[in-house]
Image 1 (cartoon, rainbow, N blue to C red):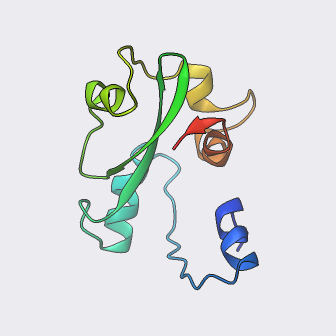
Image 2 (image 1 turned 30 degrees about the vertical axis):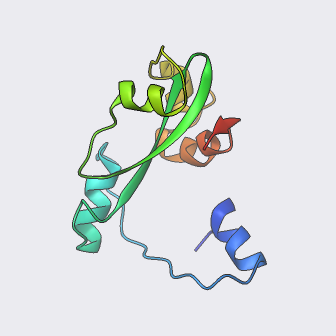
Length: 113
């Protein structure tokens, strides 16, 4: 199995971790719900990362799969007023990539964590 930048870092730093692979259905666009079902984990115990643009800055939010991101609360948490989802091109990644392939790309953006 091919690792991700995150799992490569864990291995390089000798951090004990366990991968939980599952077969991905390419028709699914609800990755969190799909993972929770496949791994038999309650959706409130599994987390997803979401990228939002807040006053022109990219911000990464971590929320339970069962939850929704409150953009007003996110803006307040980072001391801003304006908020919006990144444009369609940013959500999908660079041209020629699928949304699945762009997930690692999105988290390498210059975001506030």
